[in-house]
Length: 234
Ligand code: CTP
Ligand code: MG
Image (cartoon, rainbow, N blue to C red; front, side, top):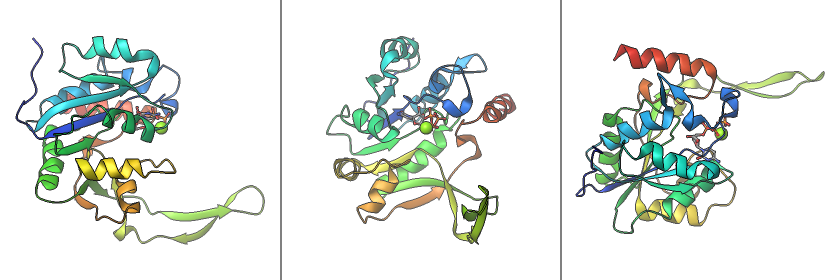
């Protein structure tokens, strides 16, 4: 029995899942790698589908895996699956093209943030609904951050220390008014690693809401170990 999405919801969620997962090491596209026996994408989509505001989900899958991803998600949630692109930004643009025009709020959410709780998805959507054109979940930075440049002998040398108090780590889902995200992508030139960056370039305000430790991006092998531990804590 496939759970249905809320036909009266006002949110479309785009899920870029077309990356190779190079930093995770050998083993195929990251979204299809297993966490506690299930693909990361299944964990992610289950949580997106459990968010009551969500009406539509569009997944950008690796081009060679579109059919496999459709089959994989058939029993998880009703989703549209499109082929992604070479860069994340291209994958998001391709997914955005499949969103019905009458959905007012669009969230972009990495498949790699597989354990993101529905509560965070709801809080980002709520902030957009409340009138913010662009919303991102953020956490304080724990490490000291330094700017570096090339040193004399192939090493790096420190150019300066950034004030950590004004820095934030940025997660997904990032939420947007549909027209704002569409305009940002239409005018995009250089690929960026997040969608809010496009809105910043357009000169619009981007609003921060508190992020979640559970929304960590599974990037390196150690992140899989941490995610598995977090899964069993709950
Ligand atoms: N992504 C995508 N299309 C791309 C590249 C990335 O849809 N061409 C997606 C990934 O599948 C992931 C999210 O964007 O869900 C964040 O990207 P990242 O964590 O960098 O994943 P990968 O690009 O797969 O990993 P790596 O950079 O280590 O290869
Ligand atoms: Mg990447």
